[in-house]
Length: 243
Image 1 (tube, one colour):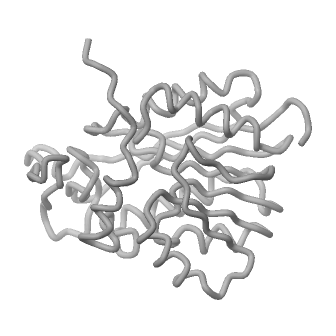
Image 2 (cartoon, rainbow, N blue to C red):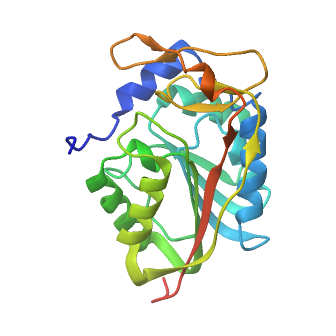
């Protein structure tokens, strides 16, 4: 059995954003656009009073969340990303950005919606448990947790499936699963910068190198081209004491 892998630290993300302000092509990728649509469709309610977005990056999905939420707190571990997110959402007074590294740091307050999109697999198994406890303590009664994760292979501490399943296990009877599905996004697969060994639909421009922790690059194998790629979404609803 392999040794448990530690949580990726903020320095990892700082390095990525220093080299490229949009390392995962959030602003241009067809995969990301499709993922945003699936994420918004997975939200059980048409509108929420308060929302927390964990791992907001440069604020692209944040703008869409703000259109359905009275107030949004968006957090990220990378300061450079937050500078761009604040610029992008400067006209949205209902959005507040915070520089935080989860699960060590967490905002105050209760939230009707908590979004965890492609972030949990950066955490160790222990930290997934700590994150579940954070979410449990800040999710309003009847509130929703949306999990969206890449389900293909990664070189992160956990795969998307492992991370989602472990989170749901650790959150325990606090929430019930109201919806869980794997929705397909199909396209030409390219390795996403920073997502080590991971493939995703690209823009048809071919393969890209993935930066590894030692500074080297990892090119995906040709067999991955044309694969079907499926982000997993699960909606959890709080059922116990009110907040």
